[in-house]
Image (cartoon, rainbow, N blue to C red; front, side, top):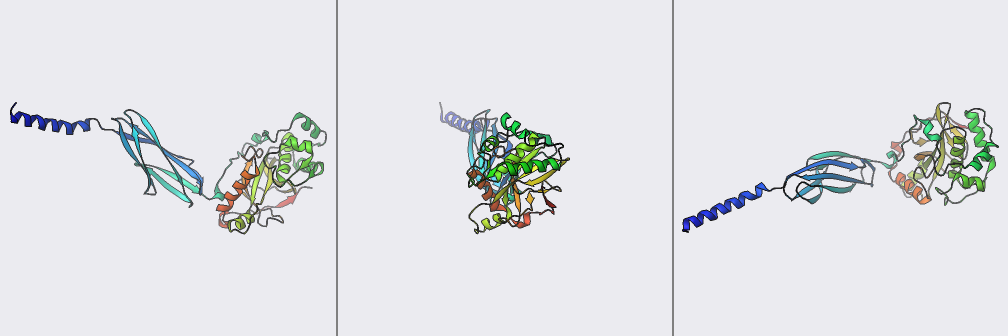
Length: 333
């Protein structure tokens, strides 16, 4: 073979080698950009994920995360031919606002809310019959249901019936303080057995259980003290302050009852979390944090869990964020 033929073969081989990679490149398509959850509290984490599909040869895709146009993270994801892989990022933000999240040209929005705005429970107030059901902790057994039936006589499901149930609660049980250690742990049947109320959670649990027995839809409301939260956020308060209220459906209207004092509001807006009932320990009122059939239903099974919710609220609360409704506060007879 002469030199010219050898040169031609070398040149041809070089050209083919340069062309060959272009015939076997990876081809990536990104889809399903997801943010979960789409709304978080300040300081809480959201997971951002995206699917990477490769329709070409095996290759590595640089997945670039940008928030408000600024690159914050990158992952190099290797995907085989015809395969799909998922890339995930975890992000937190300390400032309230809406953030534009981008990954390789795909975009979505993450909303960061103050603790005071964050809704952990959604109540369907348009369907009160849902709240005739009993939760695990608020389900009366047959023995105590029958016992209550012999003690409370109600002719109509009206405010007189509500007042009769409250009066029975006030007279039937002794009260004592358990220092919060029974929060989220006690059931209505245990309370009936002991004939004792250890705190506002027990008061609320008795009321919702008995209200439902007599056909009143009822919801427990766990709150944080507003003045307490302001003081706690400034380091001026070390303890915790909250209270339990009860929402009960009477005469086609939701009303609010203080579980211990019997104060109530008829012109009540259940969608406004601010409750302007004050006490000797709380001078501004209360903010509804959690609602449900009973504490277990809204995720509280210990005082430690409740304290975490209180601290999260205090961390983000500001007076300007709240609308204090003008309620007419009365007391059950």
